[in-house]
Every structure is written in C-alpha cells, then in structure tokens.
Image (cartoon, rainbow, N blue to C red; front, top):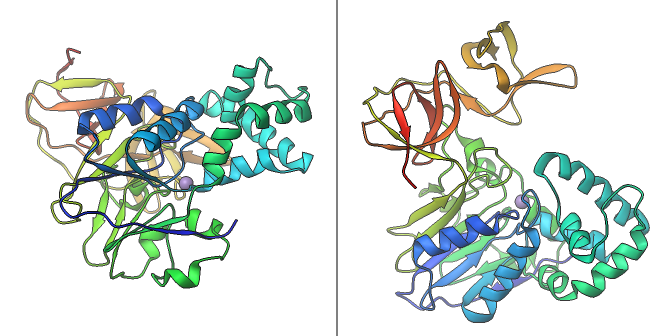
Amino acid sequence: MQTTVQRASFPPGRRVLVTSDIHGHADLFRRVLRDAGFGRDDILVIIGDFIEKGCQSLETVREAMRLCAHYTVYPLMGNVDIFRVSRILSDDPADWQSYLAWALHAEKWWGGSMLHEMCGELGIAGSPEMDLPAAIRAIRRRYDKELAFLNGLPTILETEDMIFVHGGIPHERLDELTGQDCYPLLKYDDFIKNCPAFKKWVVVGHWPVVLNCEKIPCANPMIDEKRHVVGIDGGCGVKENGQLNLLILPEGRMENATFLAADDLPAVTALADQQEAPATAHIHWGDHDVAVLERGETMSRVLYHDLEMNVPTQYLFEDHGKTCCTDVTDYTLPVRAGDTLKRILTLPEGMFAKKDGVFGWYRGPWREKDK
Ligand SMILES: [Mn+2]
C-alpha cells in the first residue's frame, strides 16, 4: 500500500487529543475520552493500530467509525490494521491461512483476535478445521464497511506545525514519501531512539515508550523537546501492565501538553510513606536474557548483563533454551501515605506497582481503593 498524506488545518485555540495503539480495548478508549471530557469542540487524532491484542477489535473499529461520523476525528493507519485487513482482502488462500494461524496463536495470548470476533458474530467456530474460504467470503460481505474504513486510512496527517504517523518518518519532506510503500513508516520500530531532529512536532505510536526507559520504566507519553518528537504508545494490550495514553494539547499546540491514561489494573491506596531507592536496571523486551544465581520461591537473584538484581520468580521464563525475564525493575517508588497505586503483583516481599505511569516496588501497608 502507498503512503498517503492528509493535510489539515487545526483552528487555533481548539483542544487536540491524540491517542494510538488502542489494540482492541474499546472500554479503555471510551474511558479515556470520557475522562478528558471529549466533545464537539475537540479534535481527536487516532494514530493507528485499532485492532488485535485485545478482545474488542470490532467494537473499537465501530466506536472509531461512530466518532468519525459525529466529531472532528482524524484516524490514521497502523501496521497491525493494514496487515490483518490485507490478509482478509487478499485473494490468495495462503494469506487467509496465515491470518488463521496467527489468530489461533493470538487466542492463547490475548484470548482472541478480530478474526475470532468476526467468526463469532457470524456463528462460525474459529478453528484449524474451519471452512476458511467460506468464512472469508462471509466476513467480506458482513464487514465491508469496517474493512473499508481500516483499508482506507491515510498514513500521515500533517498540520501547520505537527506531523502524526503510526511508526515514524525518516525525514519531514513528506512529498518524497508520498506514493512510496507505507509499511516501513507504519512499522518503524524504535523510531524515537534513532530518529533525527524535526522542525515540526512528530507524534508517533507503535513502539511502547517504556522500551526506551533505561532504569526506571514509565508508560507515559515521552516528549523530546530537542528533537520535536513525541511517543505516546503506553503499551496498551502489548505490555501486561500497559496503558492507553491520551495526549492533550489544550490550545492545539505542544506547549502546555498534558495527558491522561487508562488501564485495567486494580487501584489501591498506600497507607505509609516510602523513601525512593534507585534501580539497578529495567529488564525489558528485546534485551531480557538473565542468568539465575539463586532461585527463590517468590523472588530470585539474577544476573542481567553484569548487574545483580532481584526479580519475581514467576516473571522468569524459558525461551529458545534461554532464561528470560519479563518487563521488571527493582526500583523503589517514592510514595506518600494516601497515594494511589496500580497493583500489578503482590508478593510477601512487596507489591510491584505503577504510580502515575512509573513502575516500581512498594513495601508498605495498603488497602483496596473504594470503587
Ligand atoms: Mn503498531
């Protein structure tokens, strides 16, 4: 598919909201918009990856289509969106088969896929033995609007002073990018780490910002003032403890930018103060090989590169004969009694938690927050 650039003028003074990587989490999408008080005076930009890795792909797409019909919304393409839709719209049965194979894998990881949701609504059981050609024919008929919506999304949105794109852009001469294959711009892995400085503000999703955090993991939008780059992917659906971020530009400009976030973690109230203590490391996806020095029942001592640290034993797993650890840090959060924490894991040694988007440990007393 070719790169397309949509150009828009954002009237000065209007609030602009930006989200990305909803990944089939319609409830979080609605919640974060409700928390922001989203309304007709606002402009909403959705930087792609509407579907998969959550169990509400269809609902997310329909919610986005509904918002587009009634509000000022600029939806953009994500790599997962086009990857799945192109499989369904392909005439090559091998493409259908590859989507089904992925969907069966996704069912184990995320409890479903858009293919499962579509088959479910059509009364077709999604299984390896299913009549795939018949299912694809039925899906194309029934979901022509949803598929057309996803398939027709532009790659880039450009305004007076901003550029929005799912993955990233190598430079801001957008005319040179127009017409070229859009996939490298959608699946531009690790863009923020490697990108140049831009004149306009470039806002991207796709790559969970937490992967760029060296010692203290934080899922909140990452704003680089020097290079004019903003990453807003909170890892919703992709990271176990991820969140859906909504960047808020009160006057439509990056000055005074704020954000809101939504996740599914239970909230608790801390009942004691806790002193912050530094982190040894942030073990994250892509660089998560460890050597176990001492395996404990709940916590284990591991060697990560040349650093020794403690990690939850249940976060250790084997992959291709190597011992790995899922996303974790040994950072001790600064906490004041009364603070709200999001509870991720509770062990005798303490609670692995998220405070205002930052991950770390809290070892004091707490109670469940009243709903
Ligand atoms: Mn993506």
